[in-house]
Length: 86
Image 1 (cartoon, rainbow, N blue to C red):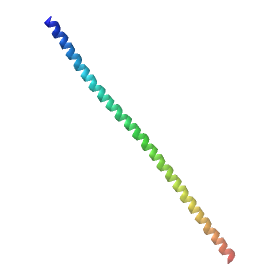
Image 2: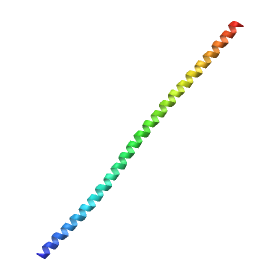
Image 3: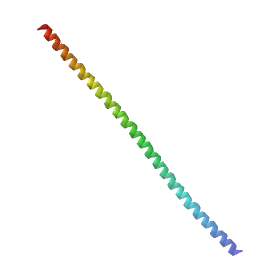
Image 4: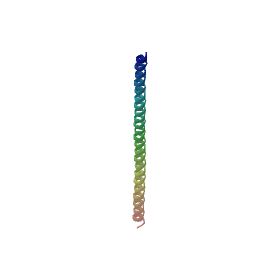
């Protein structure tokens, strides 16, 4: 009887050790998944910000181009009027 109790106690202790090890592995895997998800979100956010910066730069470049074209046109109009007046 005592031998049987010892054997069962040993099995229970082994199962408890396995449960503890599995719980730790679960915790480690959950942490790794969380870090991977955080990295995926960070990559997506940085891509979004990059695209927004490129869009703003494009709009700004177009605005500068339009202003330059308008300035050149005004200079030409002034020159034409000066020639007509002169």
